[in-house]
Amino acid sequence: MSDKHAGPAHWADETAARVIREKGEKARYTCAAGITPSGTVHIGNFREIISVDLVVRALRDLGKEARFIYSWDNYDVFRKVPANMPGQDGLSRYLRFPITLAPDPWGQDENYARHHELEVERALPLVGIHPEYLYQAQKYRSSAYAAEIRKALEHRESLKRILDAFRDGEHKIQGEWWPVSVFCGACNKDTTSVDHWDGEWGVSYHCDSCARRETVDLRQAQGIKLGWRVDWPMRWAYEQVDFEPAGKDHHSQGGSFDTARRVCKEVYNWEAPVSFRYDFIGIKGGAGKMSGSTGELFTLNDLLRVYTPELVRYLFAGTRPNTEFTIAFDLDVLKTYEDYDRLERIVWKREAAKDEESYRKLRRIYELSQVDAYPAAMPYQVPFRHLCSLIQIAGGDIDKTIEALQRRSDPPAAEQVPAFRRRCERAKYWTENPDCAPEEFRFRLLPPGTRAGLSDAECAAVRSLRDTVVARIGDFADDKSCAEAIYRVAAEHSMDGKALFQAAYRALIGKNQGPRLANFLRSIEQERLLAILESY
Image (cartoon, rainbow, N blue to C red):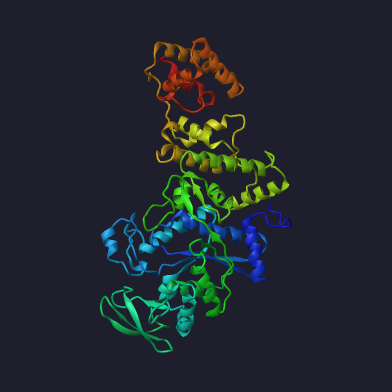
């Protein structure tokens, strides 16, 4: 549905146009992201992944071939055991090793790094993201970068000058410096120092932990790797990367992106990729920036328990990447669903947009929020707030919830049910999880025969509600007419509406408050309501 002739309607389209403009016409554009799987990969990291995916989609929408590579920097040093990991003492024995040599503390996967990689690789297809994965441990241990490492050694003094150009006097490199580090061939730790490079392929080192000394050939060595500020730009050149975003810490003035840009050009003869800065993500009520090392974080799978895949994409597609925002798991989840539903109604012309330009921008956000194919018809909508009530009325039974909706005048069509079921699953999870839905929002209908502790006056009012409202609940055309009948009952018993509502809620769910009463009564099967209220 995107209009390719109307100009960029979204920041991803603007970035795609910039990539083409700055990199020129190419047969294929390479877009990259990556992370070290040293702990749980959280939704702050996911922002980079989906930012690249959105630009890749924009390039493809322009008819360009785009390669999306995601690099697992799994040959980095295991520096710290995150607080949320089991088997802390066992993992601590592998500190200073490559993280691929630490065992999986859950005993499920090949190693510690692979466990975290698989969590992401299994989740990304659920939101329509399918990168090509590159594993840096495999690259380094197969000596794929031997020539690039040698080039860094040949340009050792130039690299030192570039790095020092972005440091003040106190932090400039002191003494002999090498652009490589070595994992010891005997004890696997990086507690080593380079002693000599022979000008060709031989590098000599010694290990401070086990006293090993050896000379290795770059073309065969498995333990040599480039330092981070050289490794990153080297891989830009090696993979010919045209676009890669980075967090605001890397994009700060004089930060790693600035140094990498010069290293890439001056040492590896490749122009740095087009980039933009993306900001941090918080959790509403959380303590600032998420950290994989502290374990205080939420993952893509956590998001997918509360939000449908389209809603997850919408959270990011609908926000410019340089904007910091928070993701809610509490009552604000309802507003997120309401905002998306309104966007959907506007796109499908069920609700008017402010103007044509606004419509075009909203439609593009909606397009980019879809997981795979654009829906053939507007998806079935039940407001998430109301759906949460329906799920709880059905005792958490999704099949019963869908069956009840089939009896409505506007039931979901067969092709709409799968997507709607996914929304039901999120409503069920949200209402059943005390860390999400507030206690006052959660309820269960009382079984027939249960009698709340009501006063005589309250019992009389509940009987009238049963006999004059519930008994003819099907006669009310809408919530408004039903609410008017409820207020008439209150007036007949000289009660204010709030007092009657509280009595009704206690009789139905054992609480003083609940969903809007008129809508609530109209959402429950009449026979069930009468059975619950029969004992009054």
